[in-house]
Length: 558
Ligand code: ATP
Ligand code: MG
Image (cartoon, rainbow, N blue to C red):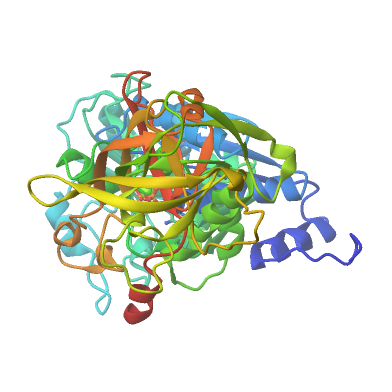
């Protein structure tokens, strides 16, 4: 296939943008990713990031990062730093970094303009009364008795709101649109509220804060955004978005386009709920490797490429759907299958003594870092008389099809020799604590000159050289496919989402591991060093098992 013939999948947003460029509506495009800094980003945000930055990149345009920081109650600088780090880690660079709070003066002027033109008024109803006056989906709302205040009175009161003369909640500024509109968002929505809260950027400069629906569209316009991409729940807000921009005669009119949110099975994609998991201690912080926050999956060992690939695969549509967890997991498996260094690590060790191997002898066995990719090189692994193998690789009363070790059976030790188990040692409780084996010196490298075949190959480490490590084996955080849709998602937490395995024995090359190196422990799974690891207490996170252990269960649930 030549390059011309290669087709990249297109989505409806790409088509709109392409049309706008073809017709000359825009000569270049400008997008933005606008998170509220009230928590850490999750995998759902990754979809929006890949889309906004991806469109800009594909069409030679620009994408800004803008913090929508108009709700000082819940926002913190910590979250802003984390968000910046996550966007960069995903591999994107913003054109400009902005904060909606930078526009507070600008927005105030726009509000004054609306008031002078009779398009906004100060309302003094209480929050409850406002709700009551709003009507319902079936019933039109009622005009507030304050709706017809004079322009001068409105201006004066709005200024006094700003100057802090009124209590919190005493008044709000509302757009004067239509209390009978079938769209509830158009029933004189609030534009400003009085709120004495310290803002992490503007301090105590303001006691009135603009509402999201007023701020967002105007921030887009101020930045010259051409295509304002947001999730479907904002479709009903679009008439208000357009109204505000038209009525204040803002510099440009971005086009709001909605797409469906990413919902991922067995997890939660809502900052508020993720917050609860952290606050109530159900997980160990925002970057707990079981969390589908970007920082969590990063710590778990996911790569930026695997997440970008995931976002490509799920595509962009207007149809709500819930994506199988396996789609995400397969993206990381495929990436790591190609790029992870192969090593040997024994998770649940069982001692093996090779009786006929010379005492004190150490042989350096050559091992490939990636069997399908010789470019990744080789390393050596020390072989000695006393080894550890996986407990599961031995069975006392083994069925015929058990191709691993049992008394009298022969297996291949990866990159080393054939060994045969001759005896077992048990402790007082009757548990097997050691295997006595013999090896065939003729089989070095893993084949026998007499053509003798063995069916099983198992991994091992030299007891004397092995490094001790803890392995954290993670599983899905929830046992329910759609925890967010249940009455109490906390009830559906998976009690087995974390298994701590303390006595793992790893090949010595892993002493050089760092949190950016990904490993496949052969036959076991993909692993990465945890950030809490130290040189005398190594901790590895299991990123993924080699195969999908949930496939069957998922099938039952669909
Ligand atoms: P949450 O409910 O988790 O707090 P949010 O929409 O309030 O999400 P914002 O910080 O406002 O979070 O989101 C920033 C951008 O990311 C918005 O444009 C929003 O539409 C988008 N976004 C958030 N969640 C998802 C998701 N699950 N799928 C796709 N885009 C999302
Ligand atoms: Mg939000």
